[in-house]
Length: 199
Image 1 (spheres, one colour):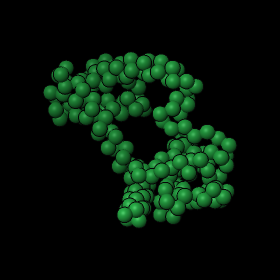
Image 2 (cartoon, rainbow, N blue to C red; image 1 turned 45 degrees about the vertical axis):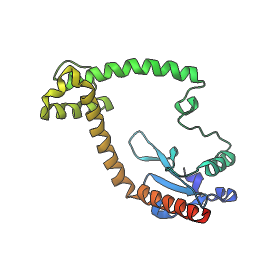
Image 3 (cartoon, helix red, strand yellow; image 1 turned 60 degrees about the horizontal axis):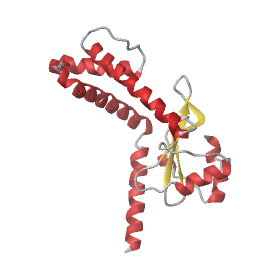
Image 4 (cartoon, rainbow, N blue to C red; image 1 turned 60 degrees about the vertical axis):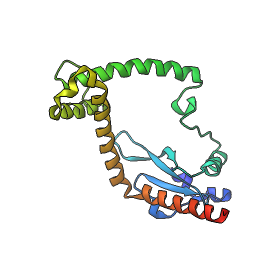
């Protein structure tokens, strides 16, 4: 990750954005108008590695100039999440086959989450994301037993996933110290400025 911020992208007009956008796990690149947030990959122990985990941008941003600079300078390909290569597949057909298998697996996991919440036999393993969902579902059922009715299965699963995602978002907000919100505000200001100049 360090290589992206050592100054060599300046030849393409891409530099590090103000430090106010930096966190322990991420830093920000800009072309002077648009921004991308670069997140470190995680080591097995959860600490930030010096490799790029992923790159994101907020709505209204056009990351193409920045991404092109990275691809050109480091002679690499950058794939977005709509391309099979992003997910580790060579072709869309390979990804489609994996998705079909995943759908079947997800149905089994959903049934295990409901069984765990009901105190029945299940195959959830401690320390997995599925178990995290199961624990949220169990808490929900303790407060609202009617969620175990067959017709409430989808609601139970959705509420459990929503609860866990909300917890993850809170952790991320604490970790980034508000950098994402500051970057969003700066992007909004740039868009408003651009629209003001266009009129």
